[in-house]
Image: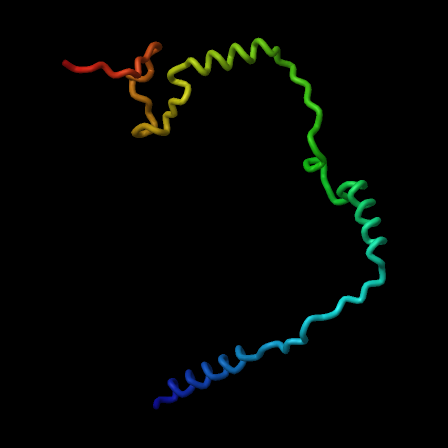
Length: 116
């Protein structure tokens, strides 16, 4: 064997020996509690009522919202959008992101006619 092969074999053997080290298993540790079960239950109830001490404003719950738009106006916009045949037309669905001229017409008919 050449010196480089011997050196490589020794290096691999040292790495394998180093990687083979493992921790010893100490078994399951016993818990030594200093508080009774009823005291823990009362502390849990108090913590639940206090809320999350580590929370931020984003997780504090729903914030009150007052709309400035009229309900009838929003409903009219929703009905108009629902009846628009081009409302789900996305330019990214077409070649080179260009909507064909046939779809840009103000009144587009998406129904097919039977050819006789």
